[in-house]
Image (cartoon, rainbow, N blue to C red; front, side, top):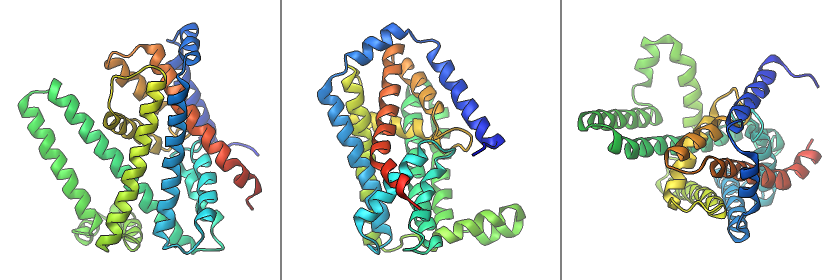
Length: 302
């Protein structure tokens, strides 16, 4: 199977960024960091990631109204998570639509995947806003912070307007280039959750999943002796760093996420080799668990 130019660029760009990150590290010190991992925290990190990915699978099961057995959904979900780890923009997760095409309408399952992805993206945007506020409150003056606050409120209003279709017809009429975007958005909105009870359950599942993802990073950090930060900080940090995984030109965001972590944690005063150990551990657990849970299904999938 030959690779096209875009795939070759993704691989090349990912390798270049990884090289630039690790060229500053001391490999003897890095080996020492990884060799002294606290096993109890490592086990807790592994369990936290398993709980996270299981909850994301349950969210899809919840969205399709239990039309397929939970374990069938879970197997497809694990396989798709593995593919999302190594595809640009994490688009590999959409293979769950292919796996389930004989059991659920393709358009319906695609829209539910998009709904979950958009919700995850909103969490990551929230993380950026919170982290920017924390950073800005210590570095920026009062007038700049007022501007940031007003701009944030405007962005939230815009998100609300797009969600409920306010002004969509007017904008698409005046700006023709937005037509395709609004047609795409309408398809998702047709499957959006407007029942309050179901919406609250959907948000609760997503929030619990995000909490376990924060726990995964928190325990990973503790296993290396990084105990400077709270679970909430790791939830926000994970959302901030992983938003780059949605960019369509790197393999699952590998490289950019790590570069973001190195930059932020270095600013927080964490030793460079400790940070490298942290990015290796979190990415390694992520891919290893997805590989163990997903490879068997991908191998046997038709």
